[in-house]
Image (cartoon, rainbow, N blue to C red):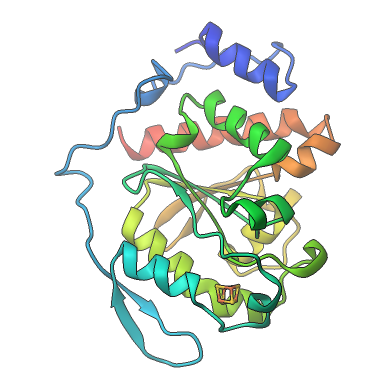
Length: 246
Ligand code: SF4
């Protein structure tokens, strides 16, 4: 299906000129970006509780959404809890087919308690709209739930301490595809030190869920040229999603 005018407008807002070749992707939810169609119940069974690792132990604990969110809100499992204003759990529909996973809260996210706000958040919204969805139709979370001081990279042990919460969110959402935005998210999810430039352009899997890597919108704001590559990533994600669900 060719890009419609609305998608072209979103691409323009992303900073991508409408030189982009037309796609032929009958991507279900793309047809009308204002209408998100959840998966039928028989294809997307809801999960009430998931086993979430208890930080610092080898055990797990069955949690539902509310318990998991409360567990995160009170977590002191790594030193990052000392500098946070609040934890940043996640936002969006809990039955989403697409899950966007970023790095860690920045200053504004820490203050507002929501991932991807501010200019980077607006660009992420445009990226999501470019694939035919609205921000509310996906689930957005970070690998790390507390803001690292001065926005430094999270330490491996901090990422390890927080990993169970994201695993819990993934198990509850059961997305059909993951979009990993930014180096930290991609490397932590894929357990690799490979540079993001080499992780892009191919389909990875996170516990059997297809995962596509793209640049973090904060980086794209500083690097206009890479927006074209980001659009290639989004097209790969759309193709992958379609193939998974055809
Ligand atoms: Fe707990 Fe994660 Fe915050 Fe560390 S970053 S204190 S593991 S919620």
